[in-house]
Amino acid sequence: MTQTTSFPIHDIDTVPEAAISPRKAWPSGLLPWLAGPAWFVAAFVTWFWPDADDFPATDSLAIVFAIMGIILVPAALLRRFSAKAPWMIALALGFAAWEGVQAKLLLLPRPFFGTPQDLLDVFMTDWHKLGDSLLHSLGLLAVGYITGSLLGIAIGVGLGRSARFRYWVQPVIRLVGPLPPVALLPLAFVIIPSSWAASEALMALASAFPVIVLTWSGISAVDPAYYDVARTMGARDRFLVFRVALPAAAPQIFVGLFMGLGMSFAMLVVAEMLGVKSGLGFYMQWAQGWAAYPNMYAALVVMSLMCTGLITILFRIRDRILGWQKDGLKW
Image (cartoon, rainbow, N blue to C red; front, side):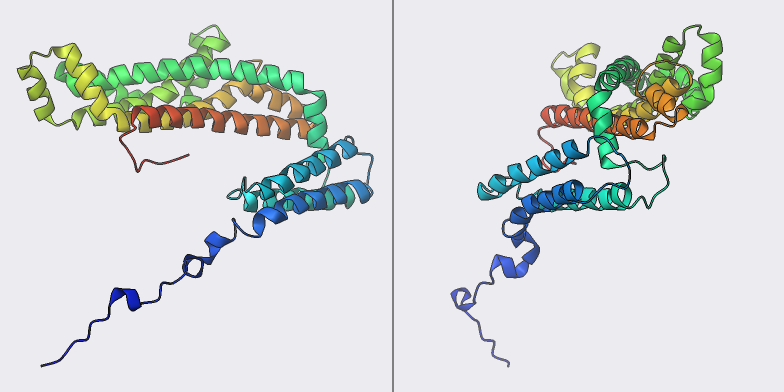
């Protein structure tokens, strides 16, 4: 018979948290204090290293880098932005490397690769046209995406709730839905006389298909017992749809909305490049035609900020409506 020896828990030395995960100690330790100096390094490289050519806004760029460093030094003292300190350092060193490689040494072919000051100069001198293009893109995207999403939810509910509706509509969805909307662009411009209306229709189609499929899937997966309980309480069809089916299917509906938003982004750029004579896509095509590549890169930056901002808003709406999903994907 073997004898086991038990050790009291209080006799076991506790291991410090920093020893278990040393990486967690970095953001709250040294890295926040390195973020400000990293931007000062970028400012020093920009200001004191002579440019290889006559680039605009070099002094302004150095001032911007120095201001970032000045902001981050007290932020480290107040323990703000500690979690973002590695990214702040990486951005500063990336800008310094970009400045040295292109503005100071001209190692990359021009005009295809610009300098940081070229990009800053575009924002300083052409901000009005960029802002106007952004507003046109937002307006075009909003109409097409909202229209397609509402139609997608309505059709998905019909497919999930009505066998007769599913009999007539499902073959059409299977035939038209998987087609890339870009392939229908020439036909849309022929059938619909207005390029704006044709672009809106294609964006609505692009956003509607994933919303239809995911809404249909969510409605079909609702437990029939929920409907039975509601019917015993005297609920009618409208109550079953809006108070039972849609709330239960909301997680999958939001997945379809996210997918539809991504497809609408792609269709937006194509429509603006080929048909609509306004927006960020049209601005990019214009810049490429004139070999104004810094303007094109600036439009890409604005488009990226627009897209991530809209996705963030959609995530906030989802988190508010689906507050009971504690482990949902965060953005």
